[in-house]
Length: 356
Image (cartoon, rainbow, N blue to C red):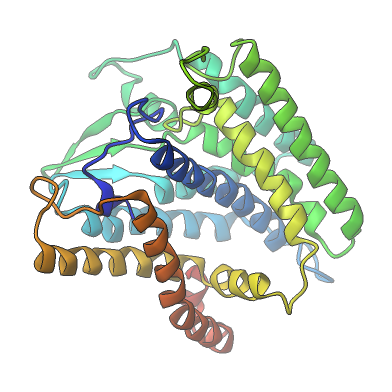
């Protein structure tokens, strides 16, 4: 729904000037990328260790999907934003997932403990690299912009490429997801899995509260007491996403662990389970289609209402964003369900369906 609220920029970390409703609406979206990339690592492990079948190397699987995701980011996602940034290609979440998958394609051959240790070192240590910077033209500028700093990479065929999602922290997250993959194998006890997830969530939040309270490490901007309680809470929770700070990853993955533990308890007849199962079976299909549905909706509203916020159409309240999001979920449910059935039926005859 970002296109419908472009008249109120949120910044990174989120601007102090935005309303509390918009702050927490934006905060809700923070949880998407970390959990998605963590689960991508888990999925890669489960692909490599199918039930009742011998181990298979996930390298080819990860390489192909990583390249496809980057291509989708550069082509299909760019077309959504072409009206705003006609000469800039923003390398965002699909880019980060794609590059992380390519990295995991090689890292997966390391010993399992080494994969987990490397993931922890990257997630907990990358904030210490913040003082390292390069200026355009220096030998390490492009590589460091890809790995850690949000910068322009250069111009190709007249298009400026910008690394919006620096990939090093995300690579650490996908490594941790791969390391945690065994807890979702058939042989692992479900109760033990839920206990591990809950304990992991509490440990993440305990570390977060400790280092954030002390303004010790994990975030580039310290917090302080503000004029009101809600402003103080906002300042305490306002973490950087580009690149994701340690604190950002601790709170998103910490609460994500609680959600995974809860999802492990709901039954197939639960309507939430059915909804998530449909969208989870065709995540890329739903993601791409929802972008273009929003794009079409934006221009329809623009044609009917005009531009009440400067030169663009925009919604008047945050509540309208949530209403629109609920309507979008309902609108896409049956197309996603039909495509999911088609994918399940034809996936052996049409391998390209596995990318959706």
